[in-house]
Amino acid sequence: MTDLPALRERIDSVDERLLALLAERADLVAEIAEAKRASGLGTVDPERENALLRRVIDKGAGRFPKEAIVAVFREIMSASVSLQSTVTVSYLGPAGTFSHLAARTLFGYAPRYVEAATIEGVFDAVRAKRAEFGVVPLENSSEGSVASAIEALLAGGVQIRREVVLPIEHCLMGRVAALPAVERVYSHPQGLAQCRDWLHRNVPHAQLVQTASTAAAVQEARRDPGGAAIGSALAGEIHGLPTLAARIQDHPENETRFVMIGARDAKPTGDDKTTLAFAIRDDESRGALRRVLGVIEDAGVNMTRIESRPRRGDAWRYVFVIDVQGHREDASVAAAIEALEARCDRVHLLGSYPRYPR
Image (cartoon, rainbow, N blue to C red; front, side, top):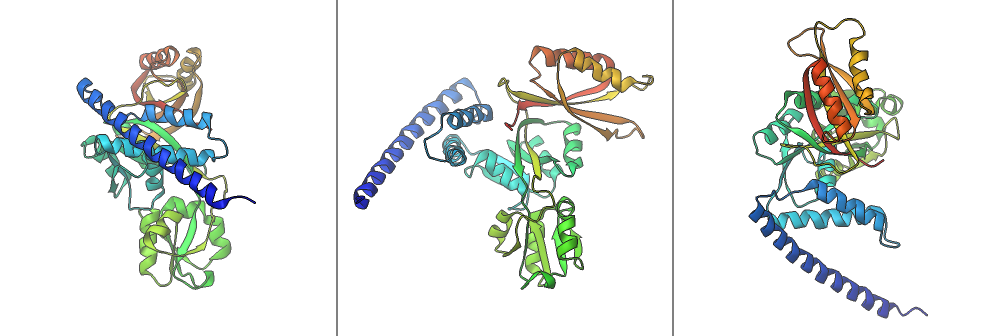
């Protein structure tokens, strides 16, 4: 028979070794912090953290799940940063939004998190140095770009430092006894749009009420006996609202791309992405956009995304926002940017950063 007490003693011994190793790591972190201060370097190095996570994922830990390895090491790194200084991160609040979840995915539990009421508020916090970093949604796989985030990037003062893609799994939460009793459904406009068909089938008579965020929707539903909210399971846990139905999004593959913003973009990693914007000159003739995009191809750069945005202060003129593979310091990308600057108005680098692994 298996000697269960003996196995538990071995587990206790392993845990003690883990604690000793964590203590040793904390001492090394203190030495690194002193070296950084002596060299005038910043406390947080997201690229180093990203490289470490990739390394431990590739190395693995036997039967221990890779997803759990990421969670464990992210918290270890987060706590290590807190030993050096307090990092402030702004996100679209209130607590429980998917932006909050994305921020915790990027930074763990140790930073000081600061809620912002709007996406513009997150950008303002970083520009005014009230936060070192911000986390905002940039693009959804079902609904497209988040216009306010794109406009805030175009306004300048910050750059994209990193990206993360999260599955968006919506829950319907409320205090009603059953779905037929739901009179109002609260959520952010994108949350309502992403669950449109499910709502039509399951609560067709409910009034749809737009809110500033999915977490704000949960707060509204808590105060409304006939109300329910669409949001994350995290928001329901934080605000104590029971789940009526889970995974109600119309498209199970629904994902949102979030970006970390900061005063500067990232260093090259060898697997990067660059986001930039440009406007075509007013005197360009027919076919101008095709010719402009041709200079990117001529430089040997692969463009992976393009969208147009209205050009503020200039009716019926447009700014084009694109993603390309590679870092702005790569020779090919630098050549493409130089060629764009020669042909376009307002070429604006929005950031180079590690590409999220797919």
